[in-house]
Amino acid sequence: MIKKTTKGERSLRTIVASYDTDGGIYTLPTNDSAKFFGLIIMVTSVDNKSQTTAGGIVEKNFCIDFIESRLSLYTDIYTGYSGDIETLLKNILNSIYEKIYQERGFFPFNLCVLFLMENVLYFARIGDLVGYNIKDRVVEKIFFEHSAKVEVNKTVVGNGDYIFLCSKETSNCINRNEIRRYILYSQELQNASKELALLAGRYGEDINKSNLILKFTTSKKLSNTRSNYFTNRAITIYIVCLFLLGFTLILGDLAKMIGEQKATEIFRKRGQVVNIVEKIKEITPWEKKYLLIVEGFAVPYDVAEGRDKKLYIVDDKDNDVIVYNPKTKEINKLNAEINLVFPTAIRTTDDSIFIADFSILNSYIFQLDFSGDLIKKVPVRGDRIRLKNPKSIDFDDEGNWYVCDRGNNRIVKFDKNGRFVKIFRLKDYTSPNGIAYWQKGIIFYTSKDKNVLVRMTADGNEEAVKIYNEQREIKLSEPSSVSVDKNKNIFIADTGNNRVIGIKPTGELIEIIDKEKLEGLGSFPPKSVKFSKYSGSIFIVGSRTNNYNEINKSFCKGRIWQIIY
Image (cartoon, rainbow, N blue to C red; front, side, top):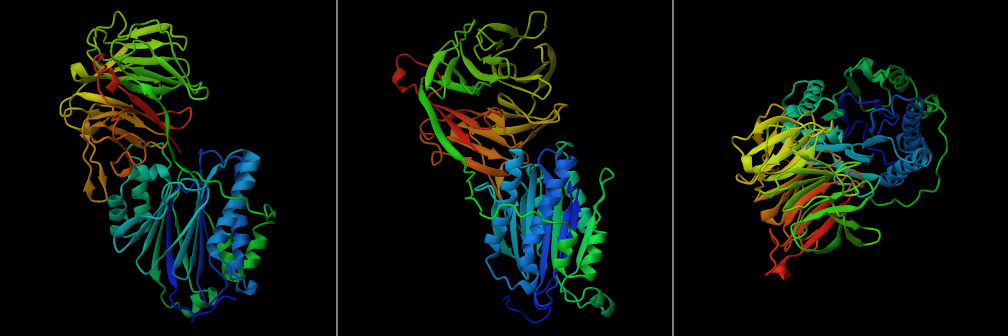
């Protein structure tokens, strides 16, 4: 049986504020007067569509009903259940995941459950929702990198503490100082929720700006009228919901039932819950893997994965494209219809290969098909522009090209057909070395002269990105390649420091990838880091030297690693 405490002892009042929750926040107190229980569920769609389809609505309601039904073992004292809450939460979410995954082949929601029992908050999630705990003005993450498909943790909360829950996209676009400032200094939580959502949209209005703020305060003695309404409860839950695009979060009927009936009766009225998976399967880890996949090159500079999952590599020793097949371990030449002199960058699309040749004698971007036949070289004849030492290239969502024209100290934009569009002349952060398109016309490039990562807007404004971990600034040394992963995070080849740095677009450190994680990285400085949309992996190229030398060819060696996550 649940051990009872003095009525109202250590009870907390929870204030809830939300912004654009894409399907809702659901809250539920308990019929237990001796303890306080609070249940809060946040559901958002992975693809922003699942909540609006008929099947998605049914699945969302199934998630909510199943969670409420199974947690009634804790919220209704008459059941006498006293098992481990963390195991119960893990089993509940694992059952939901297995049920929907078997039908869909994937899980379409980001789902988070917050279960408060007295002053202990249990949190469990499926997906990428990110949580922060604000205690004594210190902001700390309560969810970290994926270790399993279902994650469960707990923390102690007290008077004046906050929980901030948001989409991963929002987390990527705001930092901890901004979270602390807006939540602690806003007079109304709903205003803080809205301001943080607007702040997250500064780099792109189309991101998922869902967020949820919980504030915990010591309960005040309720008046006789209110205590009669909330008989046998030691909590009041205030729901503050904002309205977006005509979608309203309404919990009136549920609130009415909470005021009149026992929790177990509410579950029955919410609908019949299907008894699904009784035996919980083992949780399959989602571990990040760091693999050395191939070595033996001379001076590899860059790699790109093709739609065929083969790796296409440029190396200073070869005047051709090297093709590596990870399945058969075979290394071949593409036999390209061009003669490369000093290739430093390679990119692939579904039907083409693009190569930047850094040599002053061959300063072009070459477009090939996968048979090695030349489609075009850029600048094309007729364009009144010439490149000088093009170092790197990337593409935006419309297929436009962005080229680091290092010898001319500028970035050049071409359209999807390779025709010249625009020049961005660099003023403060010169010698562009690596480039990556982010979104909404924003690009990131590395400055070889200034040893910084630079954010450039569509109108050409430059701003150095300060990279930091908590309060400590992290300096780059000879940064070269830069890439954007599927979560819109930035990865930089910090060549002079023999490491790769992963950051949010705001500069907040995510990860340092060094020789402890990648075998041999200390002896093979990273020349390139590249995210591939085909496998969802990050590839890193390391070389001992910058140029191939026949006299010292035994020293010319390189490696390629793959990070799977």
